[in-house]
Length: 466
Ligand SMILES: Cc1cc2nc3c(=O)[nH]c(=O)nc-3n(C[C@H](O)[C@H](O)[C@H](O)COP(=O)(O)OP(=O)(O)OC[C@H]3O[C@@H](n4cnc5c(N)ncnc54)[C@H](O)[C@@H]3O)c2cc1C
Image (cartoon, rainbow, N blue to C red):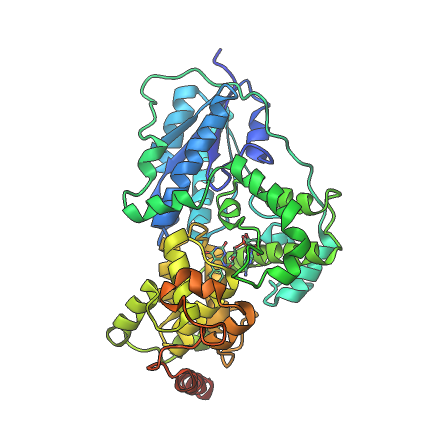
């Protein structure tokens, strides 16, 4: 009789602790751990350059951790269904487990795959099961009293606070028994081969350490040193006032439950002001995934349909402005600093993300989808739900969005949130000699007032058409 073997399919859960699929697989005699690089599964959103760099490092770290526990990570490139089917047959596996993801294309893929496996192996007692691990609450657990989804964050947050109970922490196992290797099932690629060859990604290694042990270390460092000042420091791009956990959370190198428990070991929603403020941001992440679950069209189309009529400039007209924005060469210091931070580090402070997004959409009248695509390719934390929500919120077309008539003034934003100009001087050395008063002034050819009038006139047009 063959060994009782389970397959764990790793995806956006590149960790060993708080991993329900892995924990469940340990009830079997042997475990096969697999990652499949299959861009087709991601539909119109295959991973961008920065994400692929992160992924390659993260998988290598996961493999090391598995090897230290007597197992290894098999990395394949190809069609997920056919790789899994070959593994099931080669190992005569009794079960396949994975943790759920919620983006539209992989979600559809998973549903079809589950049906396919259940039908194909109906008589062979193959157990196929998926688990909640990426979110704190399943989207279907968070409906309004009338059973429709929330479109406003505050009641969503209240619902969350009222109903949250912390799940048990699942410790990382000490040993994960491996299945014997089978002929013909040699991994097709090494995780390192997933990394893009673009030289730009080399500089990311100087800033980031991907992988789940680093995620744990970053969380501990933030809770020890940053959390107690989060509320006052979180809007300051000139300080390290936020957790920098976003790429770790995106790749599931850290579970959200672990993050909340680290803020309050009782596992309750904390009541200390800084911790509440931080957990509220984590719940914004939940809300973004929730919206994407119920409105799968929003990565490319506005949530508010009236914005389909918005009079954006034409691609020919805005091509040069878009190129300058991407390069950080607009002449607006706060915008240029943000875009250069993005290029240099694959990350940008949240306050500055709002400023650069507002400048692109409202001052330059360039469609938010252009900005979202650029972020998708360059952010190490590129996340379809959060990125979509961030762009639609800033553009005014999303749920609970910043009103369209709120045009961020990059000079005032700079003066308020980068009061000494340290952030701008760090990323834009050409302003190094400017005083704190002058450092946020745009170049002479930029007329922020006229741009704002243009934005309001464009908005008036869709209001008129409504
Ligand atoms: C235009 C725009 C695009 C964005 N694109 C992304 C993206 O692709 N990926 C991404 O993870 N975040 C995105 N955000 C949200 C936010 O900017 C980042 O999550 C945050 O800057 C990450 O830094 P941190 O981990 O230090 O945040 P912290 O302030 O320490 O927050 C902790 C965690 O909460 C979550 N979070 C914080 N703010 C938000 C928010 N506004 N919406 C949703 N979740 C949030 C993140 O998971 C973050 O890691 C975007 C925001 C805007 C305005």
